[in-house]
Length: 153
Image (cartoon, rainbow, N blue to C red; front, top):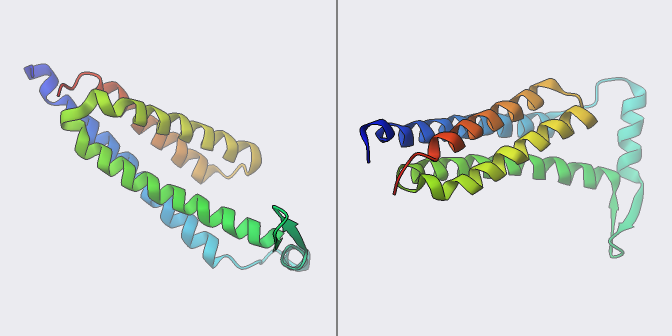
């Protein structure tokens, strides 16, 4: 390893760990806000939530579900996805020192995924904090991807 490239794997790990920390904040915020939310925008919102809970239909042709079941399941899966990112980014940071080139495809995949998440949040929710978090995570991953190219096994 050359003197110039010697510090780069550490930088790669640092950016991956920053991405992991941002993903953890996103997980915590999403999970906490999702499970603790109580409708507070008046009777129409309460009626809408009750309607979502009471309207059952066969989803997949087998089991009856409500729209609320699907909403809840999706929200919890989104929180879990953030937690999975935390673990993957932290593990990639540990691999960065000796396997910089090998981790690049996984880092690129998650960078693109977070850009897509940001776009979907903008298009369907326009809720700025998670959109910014996804953009920051994508940026940390992009920097990790660039710095990982110069590391050597």
